[in-house]
Image 1 (tube, rainbow, N blue to C red):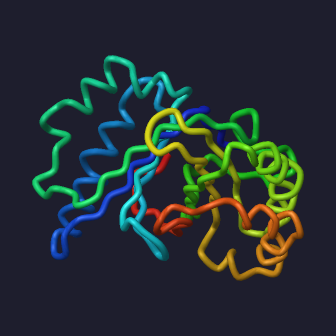
Image 2 (image 1 turned 30 degrees about the vertical axis):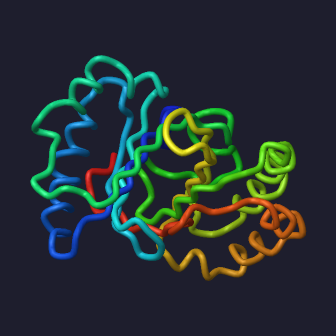
Image 3 (image 1 turned 135 degrees about the vertical axis):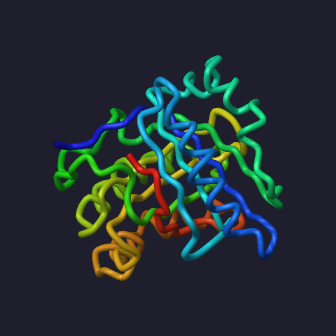
Length: 221
């Protein structure tokens, strides 16, 4: 069985003061994320802790479409007192985005079969600023260079790209991997060494801490 998902993605990134991380992690897993997964239209989600990059914690919530995040039930949940933490985050970034690559839910047809096991155990999460006059080149790079090369990397489950709806006006790129060693494979390094990749990197800018590499903590589905 191949897992599919919706076209909407809510990403929340958090940092907390030193000494509060354990309590914050429990809240992110056992309260905030678990309640969001109960909302109709939400198709899955997972909480992550950083391996490399920043901020330290990342919650991902997938939905049928971005409208789910603005519906009455989701909005009421986010406004409820029980969603508040006893420890206040020092950083909280909320990003709502819609999938633009690949163009349909699920996975590109040439990706290896993936059982319905939720979001990947390890992800790379990129937040990228692209100049407006370079968007055509950037979009072509992902569709005709980056995407096809990524499909050949062993251990990569999926690669998706999202366009912002709410939050920072930047591209979101999500790679799902079996483990962090994927980034050391010859195929991953080849993907990052193409001529087109070198050209694109000359004009786009990553947000501080991006790309972050994160290990899943729990509540994936």
